[in-house]
Image (tube, rainbow, N blue to C red; front, side, top):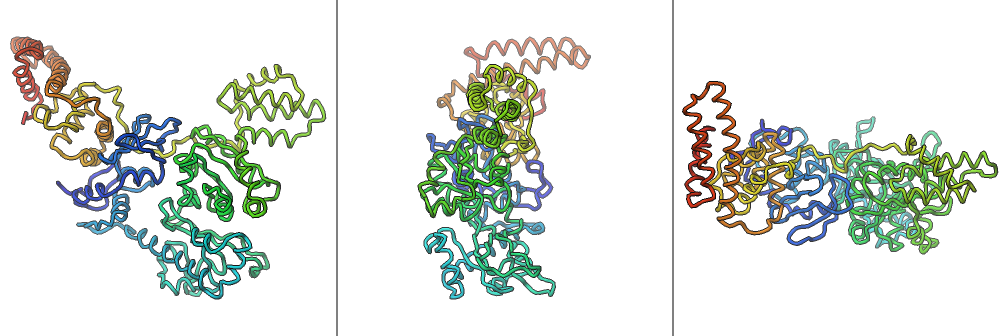
Length: 629
C-alpha cells in the first residue's frame, strides 16, 4: 500500500505529514469502535451490531448502528457513515493526523513518520500526562499531608469522607507559591498548556491555585483535563480587601474546553444509560451530594452556563434531562434558556423545585429523601416556565389577569403538540378565571404570528455537525447498489466480471474503482476521502454495514450484471446516437452497432447469456478506453 502523502486531502483537510498506510490500518483495527463510540452514545447490542441514538441528528427511535466486525458506524436516518478515525475527527473537531495520534495513543501504537511533526503535535499528550500527575499529587496532599488535616475535617462536615474523596479524586493545594510546580518540576510550557500555573512578574513559576480544595475535572473516558479550586472557610482577603472568589477554575487549554465538558460524567454515565435520566447541577459539591443520596447520575457545568454543546453530549446518554438548580433567580434563569434545545434534540427536559435559598448539596445532608423526591417530582419544562409567570403575577384585577394571560400564551404556543397546548390553556383559564374559548381564539392569533422570547433563542444545529457529504442510497440505481454490496461481501463471485463502465451512476463508479483491487472498505474510504469524494466513501460505508437479506448465488450475480449491462448499454447507445447526428460516426457503423448491441441485450437472459455478457462488457470497455482485466 502506498503511504498517505502529505499533499493529499482527507475530508478537505491536508495531512501534515506522511504515515504508512499499514500503520493507519493498524490503528484502526486496534481501536475498539464500540467502546470509542460508547463514550458518547449509549449503545445496546442488536444482533452482531450495536444500536443507539444518532449523535449527528435529533431522533427518538435509535437508527445509529456500529459494526465491530466491519469497523464502521452508520445512521439509517441521516445516512452518516464512518470509521474510528472519522468519528474522532467529527466529534472532537480534530484534523486527520491528530485523530490518528489520539487513537494510536489509546491503542499503545507508536507511529513512524517520514517528515517532521507539525507544531505542537505531541503537546497534548504531554499536557495530559502532566495533568494526571498533578491530580495524583493534589489527591495525595489531601490524604496524607499533615497540613491538610483541617481541610479533611471541613470536608467531613460537608459529608465528604475519605471514600468519597477517593471516588472523585478530590485533592488539596497547599498554601504556597509553587509547591506543585516544584514537586513535579513542570516546565513553563507544561504550566501554561495545562493551566496549572504560569510564570509570574518576577520570572518565577507560580501555581494556579493555592490553599484550595481541588476538584479534578475529567473527560468522558476518565482522564483528568482540568481542575476546579474551592476556597476554604476563613480564607484571607485579597490585597484590595475583597474576599477571594469561591471557585477558581482552570482556564481553557489545548486539553480542556469548558462548553464541552460536564463534571462527573465519567462516573455518572453508567447509571445515566441504565435509567435514561441525567441530572444537571450547578456545582461540583452538588454532583457529589446526588451520588451520596443514591442518585449517581448527576453532572455539572464547569464554570459556564448550560449551553448547546452540553446538550449535544447529554442527548447521547439520556432522553430525560432534569435541571437541578437551586431555587434562586439565577438558577431559574439558567433553566429558562433551554426550551429550544428540548425541541431541537427531542429530549424531555424537566425542572426540579427546591426550597428558596437551599441548594441540592445542603438538602442532601439535611433531608436526602426530599432531594430524591424533588427529582422524582420534577415538572415538565413548559410547566416550569408557565408556573414562573403565574406565580409572579398579581391577578387581583381584570387587567392584571389579561396581562398575565398575554405573557403565558407565547410560552404555551411554542409547544409542538396541540393537545398539550390545550391542556395548559385550560390551566391558565382556571387560574386566571378567564373564558377558555376566548383564550383559544387568542392562541390561534399567537400561533399565526409566533413570538420568540430573547431568553429562548438558540442556534439551530445538529448535535454533531458532520463535514462530509453523504450518499442517498434510495436515489441511486439499485443494480449498482447490489453489485457493490456483493463485491464487498462476496468478492470472489463478482470481482472479475465487473468494470467501471457497468455503473451509470458516477458515485457508484468512483466507489467501484477504488474497492475493485481488494482493499478493505475502510481503506477504500480513506482513499476516496483523500480525494474529496465523500459521497462515494459514504456509499461504501453504508453498504458495508447493511445486512444482506440472503447470500448471493452465481445466478444472482448474473442477474445483477445483466441489469447493469442493460442500463449501461442504453446510456452508451445514446452517446452513439449523438455521435451519429454530429457526424462523428458514419451511418453504417452506427446502425450496425445499435443493432448488434440491442440483439445481445435480448440474449442476456437466455442460453447464451454468458457470451452476451462478455461481448457487451468488451464493447463498453472499448468505448470507454478501459481494460476488462
